[in-house]
Image (cartoon, rainbow, N blue to C red):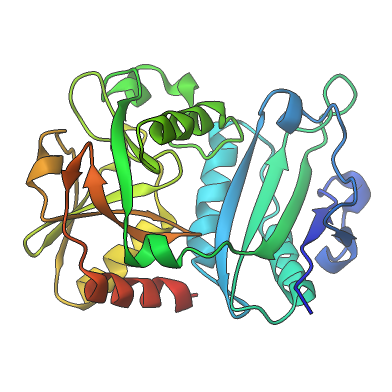
Amino acid sequence: MPATPVVVTISQPDLAHAGVPVADRLRVHPFDHPVVDAMNLGITRGDGIFETVGIHRGRVQGVEEHLARFARSAAMLELPEPDLEAFRAAVDLGVSHLGDVEDAYCKYVYTRGIESRSFEPTGYAFIDVNPDWTRERTEGIAAVTLTRGYPLDIAQRAPWLLQGAKTLSYAVNRAVLREAARRDAEDVIFTTTDGYVLEGPTSTLLLRFGDEFVTPTPEHGVLVGTAQLGAFEYLASHGHRTTYRDVRVEELAEADQLWLTNSQRLAAPLRRLDGREFPVDRTFTAGLNTFLRVRS
């Protein structure tokens, strides 16, 4: 029987919930059951945050990294501190209801609340079977570089732009993927106006230069990638050097190999970037993805 996606809603802690066990504040709903108010600020203003975690045979990947990033994003948006244990429990509860599937994911969301009526935060988790990413993980993907429209130091100069927070404001990230499709590509690597590389709209960049693996530093507003953190863990355990640093655009062409990493697709090698072909090491990538898939 096919797995049925579910939504788990979370009653947020306030004075009315003082002392109420986490399990008593969770409710499971069918995926098509309405759970979000039409005037929720997450919908009307994109005023909220989210995380997407991969799940392999019931095991949630990178649990602590995701929760830590969730808390950082909330702090950057000046949201009330999220109840991380409640979100952890919501994901686990959703996984138990989804059933025995090999590859799944969960997106959990936290918003400021209802516009003009209540600012009590809203929290929920959506759990479903993952799309089949076999082709992307093995054959690789095509990508293009597109400008983000600002210089490298924008996070320091304009912190109110919330660079490095995983917010619900994803209209630009969806727009660039449509532009990539018009250019016969599947994904994007953002660049700055002063010639540096950032990240993808839903992924972190990983470059290989010989035995050294590099990702752009989070210092300049690049989102800390949880799959990339797992990749660095795997690479270090196999004796490879791992480095965070600023990466110039021209270095993309000099790299031996490139990957875009995220929690759903895991490590997708780039077979083409801006029309330039890159080698795809299927064996190496398969080992990396095996590690990312089963890590907890």
